[in-house]
Image 1 (cartoon, rainbow, N blue to C red):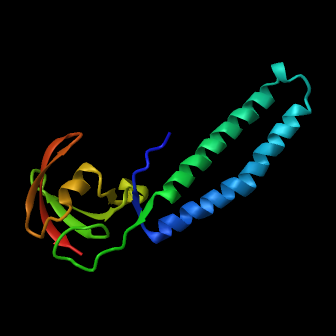
Image 2: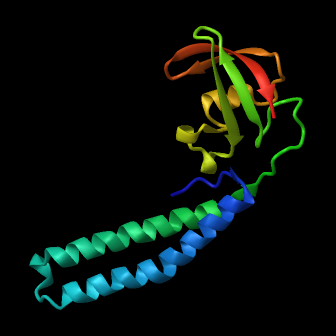
Image 3: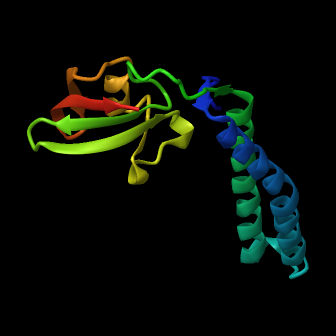
Length: 157
């Protein structure tokens, strides 16, 4: 079903997952149960598309509950490091892509908190993995889906 790997995340993300699970198991489960009850009232279940849709929704809900439970049960809390001499989870890293000379700053986070749209990348992503434990001034080459890229670490905060 789900692998039992550890999922790195902050305490805040773990709390968000617990809140989501509580919502799914209380509010959402009651909503879906009500949809099924209403659909049953329409009569013959063999040709009742509303019933089929409600049962499908219930299946999706139970799958989501199982997924969130798995994340919670296998959560590994990581704390931002105070050290700024090398890259670790919680670091803000400014890198310069040597070909384009463009600087970008990323926050290194666990996979459950990654959001590339706001420059939060996972320590398991190609760039995040390549940056881990490196130091300011290091030049690294990283294989990305778009090819090999060279970066220089400009700053770590």
